[in-house]
Structures are given as structure tokens and as C-alpha cells.
Length: 324
Ligand SMILES: C[C@@](CO)(OP(=O)(O)O)[C@H](O)COP(=O)(O)OP(=O)(O)OC[C@H]1O[C@@H](n2ccc(N)nc2=O)[C@H](O)[C@@H]1O
Ligand SMILES: Nc1ncnc2c1ncn2[C@@H]1O[C@H](COP(=O)(O)OP(=O)(O)O)[C@@H](O)[C@H]1O
Image (cartoon, rainbow, N blue to C red):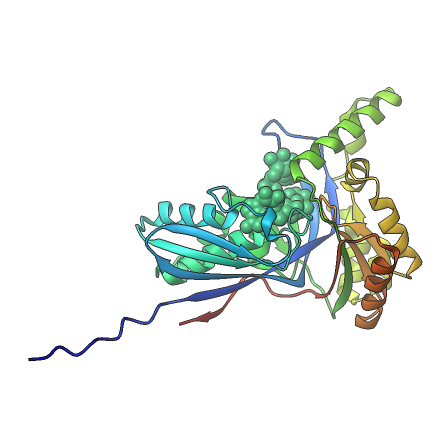
């Protein structure tokens, strides 16, 4: 009897796409004992995406391509690999996986690209390993990985409280258009929060006030009434006027060149411009898709960005795009 060659089983592959974000408002309270700051933030997911492809493998490894990929660690500190270890540990799975990440979101840019990879890896492993986790279980694992990871799962527009991990969906009508000025060097979120503490304390000392007094009402949700109304009305002019980021002074203090980026956005007629999260990416709100391209061109012409991006928003959170 002759044995016919048998085709190997087709490689299974799960492909997930997850968005970056911009903080439309970011209000920061005084640092808590655990080293984290209570915040109230309005997240919006933007059409700048990470793609993560998971395939079975003997080990647990990651590879990365795309802009700034050389800045992304491929050891156990990679958020996507941390997600793999976490889901394996909690579900008792003893399998390997290789993740390939194609980066679209700036690295350490304040747009939560690493968080998007973490969220994508959770979804990919859940599908690949048939662990069948519920949405709530995935969200709980996401919150363990990082403050911004639950929003990368949720997407759209949402209010984040606590460390930013407790989410409430926000009503939002229509489509908004953004231009982003991306910088080469990133800013670490922890360093920017620490710089904010230093600035608040220095200001408190100058006014002979206890530093914490300044933040007494900062976490009151009513502070964002105008912004929430602008979102409900789908009014980009009102939204532009309501943008706010309490980390902006700290990001500007660590990266003073960002003041010029904000000025260029204003000169190009943006409806509002802010540092995105902990920076250093600057997000400029445009009147239209065409206007976003004009603002992006102005960033390039002024030489204030290493790279420019345009995006529409809001978009959905992490999604499986194919599983075969
Ligand atoms: C500033 C924000 C705004 O959305 O995002 P980015 O701009 O970095 O994307 C977030 O608060 C960042 O979230 P994320 O980057 O997930 O932070 P984590 O990994 O949880 O924490 C990194 C470090 O930031 C500081 N941190 C983070 C969140 C928070 N509410 N208070 C903090 O003080 C802590 O020092 C922590 O050690
Ligand atoms: N998958 C990943 N992609 C990007 N950065 C990662 C990843 N995993 C870990 N990191 C580390 O986290 C840092 C910040 O991640 P990132 O999400 O890109 O920025 P931010 O927190 O500013 O939004 C990076 O400088 C990098 O050292």
C-alpha cells in the first residue's frame, strides 16, 4: 500500500483591527495613593488603526511592522503579549501563539496604540483558543492591562472615569474630521502625569494654596456639559470650542515645541486643537474631510510634524475582521 501525501491542516489565523483614540476632554484630579490619578475623560475612537494577526505557534511571540515599529518592545513588556499571558493564565490555556502587529497609530503618541494592540490580542486569542469569554470578562481583563484598554475594546465615543477604565457610552451624532501632527519621540504617560503634579504643586505654592484645592470640582461630570451637547448635536464648531486637556500644560512643559504645532493648527483654521492625551501628538478638529487634509498639509509645510494623519470619528472598537 502506498501512502498518499496528506496536506497539512490549514493554518488558522485570526485578524483583528483596533482603533486609536483622542481625548476630547481630559480632566485630572489629584494623585491617589496607588500612584494613579482619578480622571474624567471623553474618549473618541478615530479611524487610525492597529491590525493584529494571531496564528498558532509553539511559543508566545510578537513581531511588529509599520511606522515607528522599531520603538515597540517585542519582549514580555509588549502589551499584546501581556494580553496573551493574561488570557492564558485566567482561562488555563496552555497553547502558543504568534502575533503580528501592523502599526498605524503613533507609538507613545497619546493615541493609545499599545492599548489597541492589547485589546486586539485579547479578542484574537479568545477566538483562536475558543475560550468563549463574555464581553464583561474581556473588559475586566482589559482594565488589568491598562487604563485605556477597555476603551479600545468599546470604541465609538465614551466617558471614562476612575483611571479612565470605567466607561459609559456617550451619544454622538454625525462624523467628525481630524488631522494629527505626529512627532518622532514619544512621551510616557507616567512622566506627563508626574509633570502635571509638579506644575500644580508649584502653582499651589505660588498662590499659598494647598495644591489639591485647585482640583476640588474638576471631576464633576457637569464640567463637560457643552462638550456633550456638541456631540449630541453633531456640531463640530461647538465641539472645537469645548476641547480640553488637563495634561496639555505638562506635555508642553516636557516638549515645548508643541506650542508651535498648536499655533499652526489654529492658523490653518482648525475648530480647536489639543494635545492628544499625554501627547506629543497634536489633534486638530477640522470642518470637513477636505479641511483635515488642508490642516495636515499646513503641519507638513511648517515642518512641525514628523508625520501627519487624517481621520474620521467616531469608529467602532476592536473587531475581528477575519478568522480562517
Ligand atoms: C493619558 C491617557 C489618557 O487617555 O492616555 P495616553 O495619552 O497615554 O494614551 C491615559 O490616562 C493613560 O492610560 P494608559 O497609557 O493606559 O496608562 P497605564 O498604562 O494604565 O498607566 C501608565 C502610567 O500613567 C499614570 N496614570 C495612568 C492613568 C491614570 N488615570 N493616572 C495615572 O497617573 C501612572 O503613573 C501609570 O503608571
Ligand atoms: N504593542 C505596543 N505598541 C506600542 N507601544 C507599546 C506596545 N507594548 C508596549 N508598548 C510600550 O508602551 C509605550 C506607550 O504605548 P502607546 O500606547 O503607543 O502610547 P500612549 O500610552 O502614549 O498612547 C511605548 O513607548 C512602548 O514602550
